[in-house]
Image (spheres, rainbow, N blue to C red):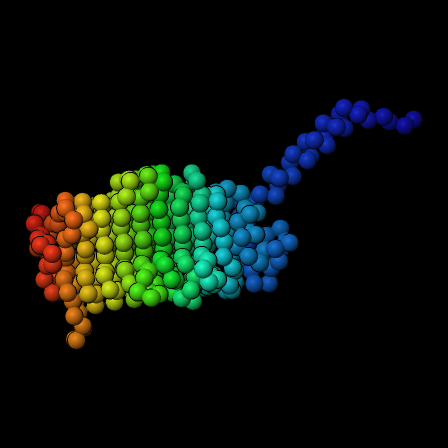
Length: 311
């Protein structure tokens, strides 16, 4: 006797199977490798070749891991994700002229970048260009040779930023470019920078509180060989154990800015002229120090430093 499978039950089973396919395709952890293919499922045994294919395949909140040292092409990130390169692996992105290495518009989500090497060859715009995301975290990265900014992060909503053990160098195309540029653009931003080296840019670190509040902490860092080491506007910043080496201008407060300084020094090599260590322009600027500061070249544009109790 032939068994007759009910049509309604068959339809329901098929619908369930089809609805499960997208969930199965979105893995919590995926992989890229130089020998991979973007037609692969991005597993460890069958990795993808580019970060973009891997980001497309990973579930929101998941992780993309580079298996070997290679170049993995630029990536556009629109969801919460971690992209990481383990110790001993150099995962690079060479950005095209006029483009970005990494573009982030993640909405409400956390984006973590770890162990990446980004190069703009002097003609790409941005190394990391983030305009949306709840949390942006950058660890152990090297960002070099971009025409506009090495790292540019702006917020239209509340955003937390962490940059640690990261190098941003050589954003100095035709006298333009910042190593790190942080801007509020409608929402508040709290940024923590630790152990960063910002070297050989037109501007070292630029902090602009636009239409939202900005609070920045910078510690254990070197801002070297930039035309202006740091520019702060409409923001508050705390600098602890920071050196500003071989920069014409040390810290420029551009209006409605407050800075607290602890163990902050500006130094110059023989024959290198420092114009000022701390300068004011605009109104509403305030600077406090704990008697451990040393500015070579004096204070410019009417700047003054009041004292606050050493902690």
